Amino acid sequence: MLEHGTSRVKMCFSLRAVTRHLCKKYRATLGLLSTDKLMITPAIMSSSSPGNSGAIEGAAVIQHLHRDGDNTVAYRQTGGKSPGVMFLPGFMSNMNGGKACELEKYCRRAGLAYVRFDYQGLGDSHGHLQPGIKAFDVWKSDALAVLDHLTTGPQILVGSSMGGALMLLLALERPHRIAALIGVATAVNFTQPLSYTEAGKSEGSSHPPAEELKYVTPRDFVDKSYQRCLMNDPIEISCPIRLLHGMRDDTVPHQTSLDVAQRVASKDVEVILRKDGDHRMSQERDLQLLTRTLESLVKNIETDCYSGESKL
Image 1 (cartoon, rainbow, N blue to C red):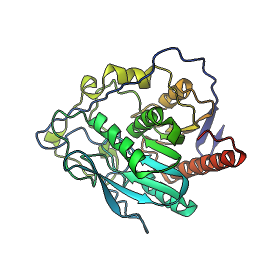
Image 2 (cartoon, rainbow, N blue to C red):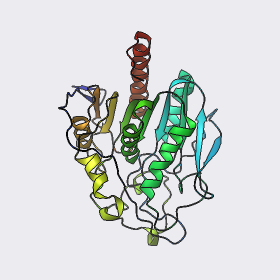
Image 3 (cartoon, rainbow, N blue to C red):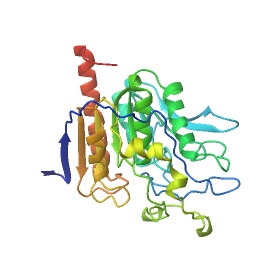
């Protein structure tokens, strides 16, 4: 059934007992192809608009979480009540995209704690990644540091594209901290070469010089244990999960969200498909769907806490 361009597929799965060893260890890599800066194909896994300043009225000021050496993770944080909300950007993206800013506006209105951030080497973060560093591991550790050091109490993680993969990994490592997950065009299949095909689609996007465009092979991008964890194994996450995906997504097929929904252990899973949504999912209707989904989850969590059913 279509409703204002949105197809809802609600799924509740009761999975059999997991007997296989799940991803206790996972590594993923992005090739570092320059001597002094990160040079990876931009925006191929990004779902936010390059060039968006993130300057919204009353926006939180930029602060920095210190990491290794002189590197920092830049972040904007708004105080409020629980459950808090944490946004994880996509590949080569930053905290100033349309979804991240719209979520901050909503959280300010609702009085919810909220944090958005830039991975090391990207956006407003200080420093850069050295050659040979496995960027995906660094960015996953950045997200975990933001969760551990900048947030308190139960959190709702919102992951965009590659940020959806990181969202799942954080939920595996910190299940007691995660109240719910919202994935937007969640990307878990990194077996295909990454190429510069997406960034030019957004009007006003800034592109690097042509000679800087590189390819990252699957072998450079992710190791087998990580691929097995997110692409094949059952995923031992039991919190409520909402997976939003555009059916016109030509970067991450919407069937990916259906596959993830089948493999997670949670019985409270909804896959929500936008028939005219693309990979970025940043149209006005997309943003409205995102905030409605968040609002519904918050109400459910508050109701469970009030009735004493919360597991957090």
